[in-house]
Length: 598
Image (cartoon, rainbow, N blue to C red; front, side):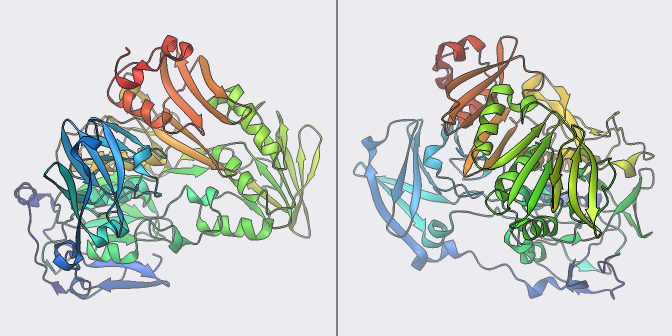
């Protein structure tokens, strides 16, 4: 069991917790009235932490010596709907005026540090210009993703028509805030094989679900299990920053899981789920009873079907170790990448300056044709070719050849033979749901778990989230879709957690994604599956453009490069439920951005 489980002696850990009233009414959720100390694997050894060894630090923002106050502007300096980055001497804040009121929050997005002053202010929240995360301007709370932390909120006062901000020096420096969370109630004589909430999968969906439960005051046992050997990490960086080590891309430090009693069982694979008995059966035979279940297992990469696919130096990028190994082996060597997917293209971009040669094999005519359209795909392809990436399009791999047990050549169906020391496979993925086939949980013909707007499956108490689900997308008239994006996985996890607590919250978010290649980013919002036309503004040759994807007369998605914050603006329009007409973007009429259009 990967060293994650042992039979510890019963312990008694007393923790003082203030439990919200709504949480006290939910105590009957526990199947056994007991919980467990945190267990996670370090160097192959199971560690059982007594929580009093890791007390939560007192709130530093209450220390008067830590506070700073400064006059930042005159009340007439900002109009309604305006934002300004202001300097308090020891750090900056974002000053916002909306509906006649001033608000002050952190000025950087906690996700990757984007300047929020360049973002979009709408409906009481500011949206990040880079990746679309949204923050409430009154509280600083994160309302849409990606990212886990909220913004610090600062006090604003008006004296003699001057605007003053009072802020914590530490908050000005960190520019992020973790929302208050509950911890487990008193733990004694816990049952190791029983939990209140079991989360299968430790990606973004699983982690956000666990954190949301704690943020909402849930104080019973939460167990996450993962086939991975690491605590949850920033998976998109596996192809964008391939030499990152696990601790560099961890979403939360190990102490976080200790502090908030979120157990992570690594290298643990669930083999079956018995929905009648509410028991998850692990591959090694261990069984765990649950009360509420979240399935967030994500996708598994497809393998090649040709001869030689099992040989050494042929990789799917699934873990940090995979990515690190590819970088090491590819340096000054010949690399062949199969599949012009997001992963394949990002890997090609990352290795272009490190490898001797990078060749990319793809069945389509241009990269990203189905996702971004042919014109955008060709512009991206041209950028890659100018960076020494060679494309072999409209062909497939027929054979991988070896020499002394290691990859030597990639043979294409076109007859071309490519020298190859390393091969990276990015030909798509399938949902990791095979273990559910006999469970009674509704799975569609492609293997995706079917959920409703509350991320509930057809089985009471069983929820699913992330890349392995299809769900009703409000943006597309509640059509059941699969959206395998990092941002969407976060939101799925949050919605699932809220509905485990019977909040009745429905998902209503706009898909948002990005890709990074050669120091440039393509941002995208919406869902353009089945689009019938693309309206381009800007210059594709200069890689400064915005592309509007339309279906009939309606804009259903947008992509841009070097055109910020247009994608975040469109995302806000779509999130408000407003329709953007094709004629508006064809004529260049941008009145719809200010709410004056359709």
